[in-house]
Image 1 (cartoon, rainbow over the protein chains, first blue to last red):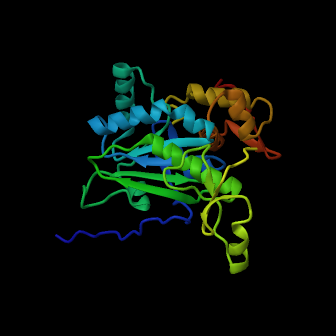
Image 2 (cartoon, helix red, strand yellow; image 1 turned 90 degrees about the vertical axis):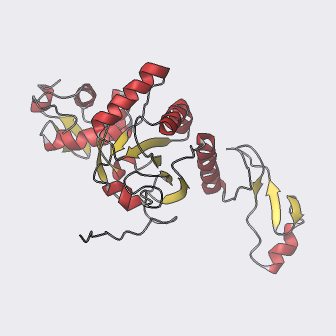
Image 3 (cartoon, rainbow over the protein chains, first blue to last red; image 1 turned 180 degrees about the horizontal axis):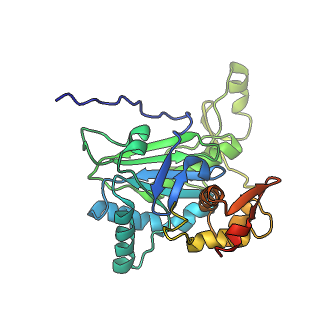
Length: 218
Length: 71
């Protein structure tokens, strides 16, 4: 039997995040409902599975940190709303950790396909551990994909939000292993004249193309 | 509709939205008054508007007579 395969292109950084309307554990939500906030959409393979449970607990424990950054969380799997509710209740009952964010019930995989969350080489039916950071204007700013076997590091997701927000606010880049409060990278000079001037501008430079500076927090 | 139950009553969060909109408010003002995340307020407003329990008036939302009966 021939099976029609819908060809969808994975969304790319710098593009508008795909719109959706989806049933969730907190009602019907659209992407537009989150405008004005940063948003982390993250998929997991299935409810009531061990790695996913540790991830949900970790996201819930850092929920206040995400809120401090004007960032909402939105989970997703192909499980039903009753399954999401039962799983969240079970996590709270067994660990005392309440899941405060909504979870999309994407049984028809509509949102998963739009966001490229199904990777057939990993699973034809479950979503991989995809993470999308969307800015307040609805643009895709950062994408992470983890396989079914590897739980994510939520501190890294927070660090990425800090880095994106810092880059936006101060027109700077952030170096490897950067954490909030550390020196940032000054944008590279755009011509020879500014390259020659760069070393005299008082920055912490290795050479003209790699200079760092302290940020004066406003 | 998740914020309107099969028997026609509304959920507790929808009641908070309706109560907050007894005086004209923006979604942001409703969220603050109701103590709910803005995304949930926007979703509830959409459904409550479709059901005729809340209406858009001069750029702000106001609970209708039908909505008042649901609180």
